[in-house]
Image 1 (tube, one colour):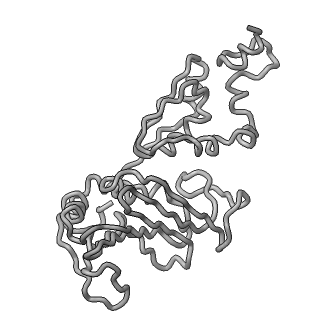
Image 2 (cartoon, helix red, strand yellow):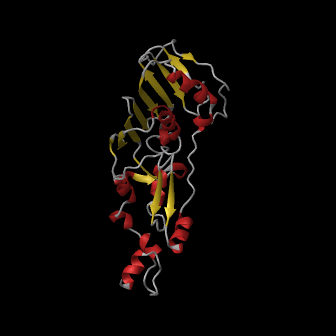
Image 3 (cartoon, one colour):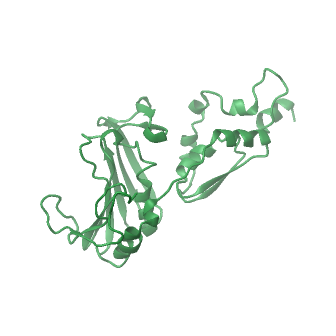
Length: 272
């Protein structure tokens, strides 16, 4: 086998002083324009709960995008080259996604049992309302919303499919709208997002977040069933954890039929 082929693909560095190393070639500027890792991975049948081995990981070109997708799984980077593994370890950062509702008694010991026991009849739709203002759109999608989706997965498993529409001031977002996200979120695009998720058995979930005026943030999930509705404010909201309404599609204004479902511990500023 010719040496130039071996140097290019085996992960070993070149003996030629002017030839870039395998790591430099793998991370050369502009590579993502020809080989976008997120676009490639979008064609892979991977579930967010999967454990995926990136065999021949190199310096982590596909490893890190995979880690961002596997929010409840993990990616294992494997390579025969010590140089590549060292580069992968150097370039990567530990990704930890915590789901505060997994350890929150009102959700685990009250809300989920109520749904399973038929408090709202047969659940058929969830409506998830994200943040507004400067955090509207997908700014905090990987930060504040995974606990909502993890809650749904606890009850209905992973969605079978989803679709989403990113917008910038009402029009479809384009690559020109990319910008650095807040709080280390990486690149984001647009200031609005609508997404739809379909689960086995006919259950579905709508998600929306847009900039708006930012004066108030709904930030909650409503679960609609054939015999009522549960509304669960997000973890950062210092409000009761669970509200119940006896109607499938309750009104939003001046409706005193909303009732607080008692749960322990009571809400406080440390709920997050």
